[in-house]
Amino acid sequence: ELDAYEALVDVRCYELVTLLLCSLFVPKCSSTGTTVPPCRSLCTETMRRCGFFFEVFGLELPEYIKCHLFAESNNPDECVGSREVQEAKIRSQNPTCSGFMCDKKRCIPSEWKCDGHVDCNDQTDESDCVFCPEGSIYCGERRCMSQKHVCDGIQDCPYGQDERNCIRLSERNGDLGRGTLEVYRANVKKWAPACISNWDPATSPTTICSMLGYSSVNSSRLKMIGTNITMVTPTKDTPAMWRMYQKRQTNLMKEFTNCPSSMYPVVELTCSNFECGKVKRRRNFSAKTRIVGGTQSSPGDWPFLAAILGGPEEIFYCAGVLISDQWVLTASHCVGNITNRKINDWTIQLGMTRRHSHTYYGQKVKVRRVIPHPLYNSFVAHDNDIALFQLSTRVAFHEYLLPVCLPPPLKEIKPGTHCTVIGWGKKEDKNTQEFGIGSAFSASYEPAVNEVSVPVLNRDLCNEWLEMLNVTEGMICDSGGPLLCRDSTDRDRWFVGGIVSWGIMCAHPKLPGVYANVPRYIPWIMQQIQKYSAGSYFT
Image 1 (cartoon, rainbow, N blue to C red):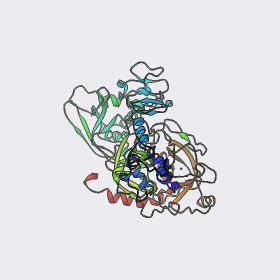
Image 2 (cartoon, one colour):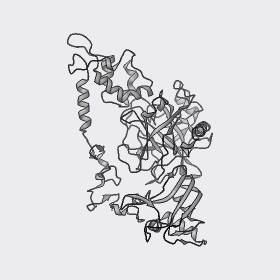
Image 3 (cartoon, one colour):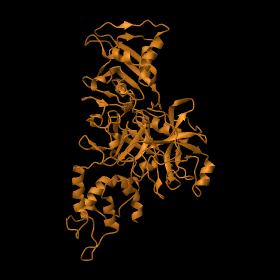
């Protein structure tokens, strides 16, 4: 009976959940020969932290078990767990850290110290590094930067971190971009309207929308305030000049920030058709053989990856992918039996690949609606294992937070195609543990995203290897687990080919992972988005 609760233990919603379960189902005997029940505080705190996961995993405690009926005592012959609950609270208030402690409570792996990526809000992980003068932070390859270097139009860091995400539109930066063009002013740590000192109505709007990730311009309007503006006369060289600015933004950023007075011309833009699936990699990823965990990704490598957090303590337990500024695609088994009854217990974390770090670009969003596939069947090898989260607010896109592309309906992902699996899945494997990567209800999630290249397999071969289990048309197979594939017409663009559904053991020959075949579900996905994306809330 206790085995049924293994998923609850593995998700680590509370360090004492095992103690509660054992005291309920395998109670100890007191000195007088009677069974000892759990203490009220143990039951109450476990249910507060883990009640959400009981429902996700379809688990229930026997009806006669009510927390308020249990006694509370430090006497181990009266009840179990009171002392342990008190000790756990003390530990949480004074956490120990075997890595590097920053922000007073954040513990990060020691190898993240001085690695060129800021993981701590107080920036102490990149301060006091070799080669860097006092007051500056390390940004990789023996190069340092200070606050004054941020968004000044000069790339000081090897990966251009100091010049990323320096412009935005004031109102919206999602599926639609709208508002006044703004630039980040590092000296005051605030956004301000960008100074427009040169403007070519034929090319400038398109270029700026392109810099923001959009391929279309709906409207543009200059607000003529204060200084005179120089209108550029279009020539055959003008587009080339702006393309140069787009690639090397030095002069453009200086123009945006250097105006002669506090009153200057600004521009209002509306941009559309955001270019999904585009990723700026720090390095070229070379395919590895299929291993559990794969190769660690660099921060920002996979800007569409979403972490699904559950319960009041926001415990990570599943993954998904961002497909628009208000929709996340995931697996139905991650939704479980809850749907919309405990909607506030879900949190979606976006824009970061290192789960324990502070992120200047990440966003945490609550959930407005959960939509599991109506024909999801957990009893037939998780057929139709796909679901949607509608976010409570629209997220803002930037280089670290972008939507992945959806494939055309019924697109065939041919056997032999190499796609990339990403996730925070465990590096160890349990011989008999079932997994859902994207879920992977098992212990020891990785602090950083790992990636590995895997081939898509022929369905007949997959069924042959997974004898007695039916791999349906709604599934595809790989030799390992969210399945991201390159667009054959644009190698810099990625689409989501599969959502990890199930498998038997990780990275074992002839035991492939099985994924929900996303192209097959595009009509259903688009139907849900159109159904629930109407009204003033979404304008």
